[in-house]
Image (cartoon, rainbow, N blue to C red; front, top):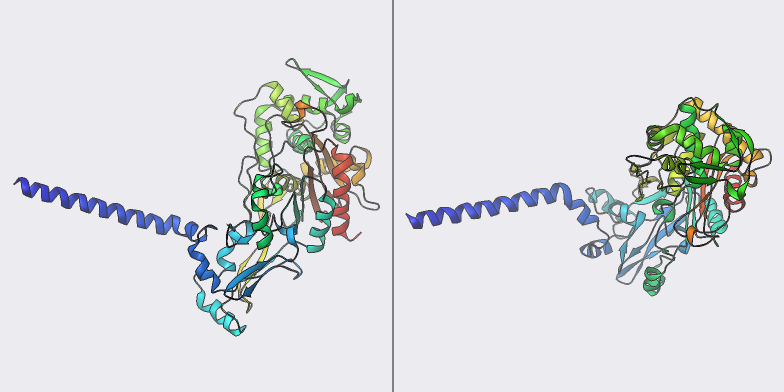
Length: 471
């Protein structure tokens, strides 16, 4: 009897282990397989990928941005413009794996998915080994080149997008790196150890206090809540719960309304407005513009942060001027500018326009889609008028374009280095043009520059908007 019980226990144990194995294999097949297969460090892909000519990547007009060529028994990835697209396309390295679009669209580019027969046929027709799919982006190469030149000596980011469709027209993060194989391998250790963090795509993953650019969100909240008629006597400083809030340069502007306060970027007015709006309105406003929410995009994006479960009055005042614990990505601020430009509708940003086989069979297509209806068209129109005032008679004059109505907002943001000494503030500008029929929106940040957004970032934004408008 004891022997029978032992046999039964062994059988039960074996069955249980078998069940666990089946459960794990099922879980792996349903939830884990794809991520393991597509992982950029999965060296098992190298053999199969080397038998497929990796697909090419083009800009919106057909300009070649990345290609592969066969050198003997190996395949080499070529990036004709060096570092220009390092924070969009990323790299494809036999040693260090893949990043960004090379990683997220690897299954298409390397023919690692379930239509091998189609791609194999298209590759053979081309007279070559089987070919991966080709990809076209929303990026405009000429505009990208212009953005890189304008940002060349600045640590930061610039994002240019179509506010009506969400297409990313240019996106530059600085510093950058050369993703070509030998250059990447030779400089890898230096790049990884650099305090400048050249591998960080600041446009999508850098998190910064927004400074006064956040007054766009605060103003929208005030209009939505019926507080747009607020007036204020500014003496240059206001004390809220024992903490002083001052205007930049110690300026005192006298009697202000929300339009004039926005134009001169009056901190005391918006600190007071933040306390008047209160916690719930501030939190709702941040959420309506996408903070604390994931951004669906073709590349990984850091989630912008509004980390308050409750707020003191000084917290509300700090948020009112874009400080406190609020952190945003440059992409998020470009989306906020685009939202105001697009009558309060925030479009989903997108970067990949089309993926197709070499014989032209379409496998994937991007397109416009609404992400949020953040504010009413009336509120957006009101805030748009305020932003036009910023450029025409306020801190954003350096973004003005002759013959065009430009809407914008400057920002100068304190950060973790500001307390150690002056000259470390982040400089911001967001805006769009033409104000009456927006075709382009921008966000520019120069981190730790110590400059004002109006002096450093507004002229860059002007050049980018002008270039896209053909002026």
